[in-house]
Length: 422
Image (cartoon, rainbow, N blue to C red):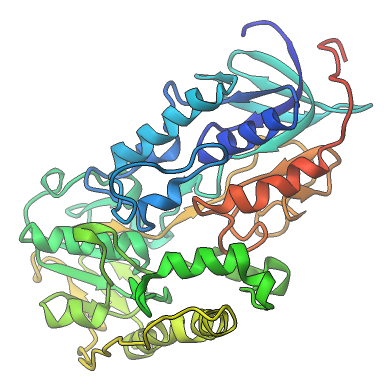
């Protein structure tokens, strides 16, 4: 694709969201092209660490036109399995994908449509769907530059396995899904693990007889029939809540809870939020007890009432809540001498920043987030799919495109494709 190409709809990104949109557009009879910067299919799952597993069950990998039909619906796929499934989906739906095609610039045309400048030539499109997710640039705190050069520092994005790290203890900064899964993995490898605990919540692996994702999916798909629903993006009390860490959970060993109190009782050492660093010395806020208490309350405050109401109104025969609370109260660390504690590595599980600098249109808010309503931006013809809280907390999940994609298809303008000379 070295010369200018004209299409009706351009989809940027061939991960699960972009491919789901491709399937929906094919069903709607819309001509389109999917461009992917990677040289092979599989989406961002290919960037995960070696022992990565999904936190949602295998049945959640069902995509438009291709339901999961494997032997273990309640299991949890490995990195290579989910990347392979996404790659196969492109073949199942016959998606028109151009690999090795990175969009460097996307700009509205004076009259109508868009010009995308890619590494394989220009693409002119009447409509564009940006399906690049919300995890673009690994976020490293500025204070990491003040830490002794003796330490190996890496973002969780670059972590692959315990053997790649130098011998010694590991400080993990961040207590969301990734941070706690890596903490378990490193502890199992014999490492002395320290965790700087932030504001991430946690949810139970199972609740009232089912995997938590079974209840979440049921409410998202059928809750409206019973007058129950989780909050939408428009109902968030503060738009910054879109960027909060995902609640902790694990798909390893058949799936289980990740409870920091249990981690501490097993020998991991916990601190509050990291506040400062200088050479071999790091300090933490005295907020560990508050952060653990907030994590304990998270599920009950955000999800429990909605799920219980759904169970009652749908007349579902479900056992009562049988969760057992862990009362262990660890002593919080407020200061560490990294050298004295034998810590050789810091893993920054501090999430990602958005990067839409390649979109040359005034579409971003003060936080770099695209202004949109259910994926429809303020720029006519520019749409998004798979964003954090595009419509709800499910939007960036595997089932998000199933919920949000049809809405976008209905709102794509029906028109003939523009020409490459536009």
